Length: 487
Ligand code: BES
Ligand code: MN
Ligand code: ZN
Image (tube, rainbow, N blue to C red; front, side):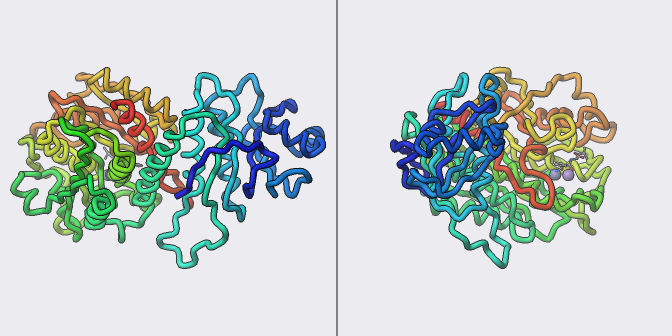
């Protein structure tokens, strides 16, 4: 974890391993850059004349051993054209700067980017976003590497700013939650299986005594009638776990978060193609986000009652697997015909959503890497948001905008419900070719009647794809933004 501090020294005097300043295109210096330029006898201006520093948004140039400065390194970050500068460009420049830091042998960095005016954003926003960007870039996955990188590691980042110092505490807490979500997401499925998730919950409760953990085991699931969750799990040697984390930062009805915890999704008997199947270790990122939110809320001592529920199972093909055309009975009593064993997320979620209602939620939100269709619709930039409650939908959309962990709403109209009809059960677990993200939402909607409920499909946002792609920790930041707004 990075440490965050505010600083009051000017850039030429600050005792850090590196100073970050911004410049705009067309040779426009920010005030911090202008101060360095003056202290160095016009060096920055000369480098902009020569084109070595170009100011293009997100570009970085590293300068060493500049005469007249205390810090041995300066990173000059391009902010693009000044008149087009906005929150998105601020974030892009900040993220690129911190990414570029990653390869350097430095312990402390001092950023003056937080001094730059961002239209419609205040100092707190800049501080929070900068700190989260710094920690996001500093995170390294090492759990299963034999040779751990051992060079000097960045330990703290100092921000020049006038904002509230409490905001950096909030940033640390959220960063811890994001890190936990990322680490759980990244761990391989032979380590991070349902039992491991349950262990992690007990671990979290040891660290944060305000959190109480209960784990519902297979035999109790049977007693409760959780036929859908049990059906998904029956093809695996790893028994399912329903992990409940109760953070009582206040009395009263809780916000209940339900996260999909498929620790590996082969597709089951409707097996997935080999190419890309390895990315299905990330199919528990909804659960990981719930862990992250509970961690962050507890670290912040948020005065809220939050219950996190993560149904965890592995979807495997086996002699005991559930089959296409099986009819299973859910905890809510609905008979569901399985028409695709790869539509397993909604099955473990429906029983968890039914179970969640015993907590009498003030608000109920599920988070799930639920459909490839959502990735087709929205790509990697926005999570899919579905809700029949317009107020809740708006609150979450706004929290997404503010945290820049954004969602986009898809309709949950009744019109789509008929796609789930079948002649062999109350309804089926898939809705056919069209509107796959929505029909998955429609399935869940049948288990949340009368609830103040929203569904977040994070299939496109929970991880970056590719060999070196890692879990993103989304939407922990969005949910924390929303939760902080409730107090
Ligand atoms: N975990 C997947 C969804 C997914 C796919 C997330 C690709 C991210 C990337 C989910 O369990 C799944 O397999 N969904 C199916 C549903 C279909 C069978 C109706 C899908 O999206 O193809
Ligand atoms: Mn699946
Ligand atoms: Zn899945």
